[in-house]
Length: 565
Image (cartoon, rainbow, N blue to C red; front, top):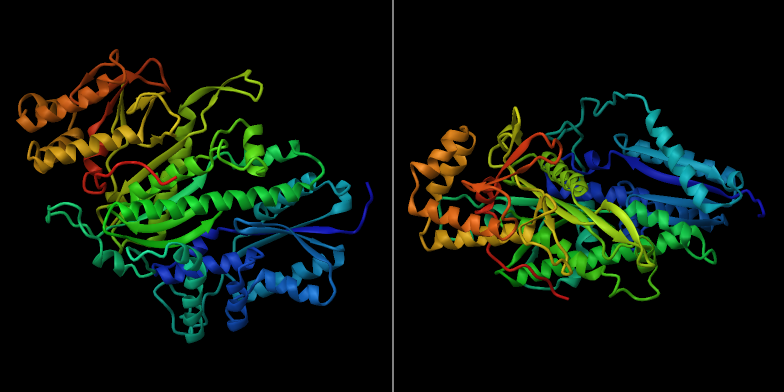
């Protein structure tokens, strides 16, 4: 293959989350999110160029900088851009290195707290093989990150006005730029969701004023917001499948097309989920923070956050079904190559009061998302390939959802123990993360493959809410059960045996009816699911069903799962 002097560079930023979410003010986090996108992506949206032209002192735009070089006659091609990074092809090594030096200096001068990494590879090193170039760019970027030295940076010189985090306060032009940044992030979604009952906000106070309770219990404080973090599964497998595609098109052509199609599917899933949920109630409040391909972060009311996250995933299942994708779709071909019937994702939710440290709430949501991805590995399935041959037992491609409700002001107040191990017994106090099944799923509705299902969980929550409404069980009875759960096995059993009220009896009957539908060979007493421990077959595991259910009674409105086609 013909060699030339073309040089590829890979632009990435480390610790994006800590930069974006370092403030407790939503509008500042939104501004930081746009900064990351402008620096690392060649955004095509016209308003990012307008943003740069108006506020050159505050915004650095990768697209604008590259366009300026093109005006000088430089041959530059964007090979890939999205998800907070870009790969750019320059006509020669000298131009590439000069750009790296100048661009890095600009970034460091304006945003010294950002960790920018730019690796580069001469195309001739790998005979212009784009797949190998792509891999090497990432390897070299990882080496740069591993080699970084600890830094102590001066935040101010002691003469500026500083904010609550010790950073210099923004000047008036920067505040105006924040307003433009908000418009940039939400404009498309807001225009597409032109509904009166959908409110976009970047003020945390909105979640205090408008978080209406869905029941008449005025003793429960409903001033909570829900931070939702969603990340797609098996994206790496789809990228690896590109090497099997027809060589008539380049590696980066397929990568760009795949990225574009995934972004569209996720965007449509978010949009239609918001519409679906808004139609089921009097309205919804939304704060989009990150909408970058399969990486989603947004805020809504605490009482509907779990439902909205589940509906986004439900919409994702529907809209990425390979049977419904266009036959010429690159995404469809890659998914079929990997025997993926539909895209899946993990959702993590943190439900907190608006005054809770925002960065902490993001970290909690992402930890719950990570918990969902880890729990996927407990679910195994027998897959078949394109020729209908058995591909063996493998980790199922499923969507999971997990959450944390922070009722106190400190992280230590989030929850009690996850589990207790006593000799040959393992007591587990949570049934989440939950498995969100697809429409083609025909198995049990509450428990399968060692995992509890969202649909069955939601069904039980709605039944208990109906029992409370009919005064068949009280909030105090449910709280007594939860309190006794961590007081020891005997104390917990006493609530059912010695203090058995009509409400508790009704509850136990209903739970056991649900469990008996799943596996009659599994022992069930006191709303406890007893089974053999998956991690250690010598141990028996007792799963306390009611803990997570009681926790969410005030944070899940009884609605039917579904979704607009």
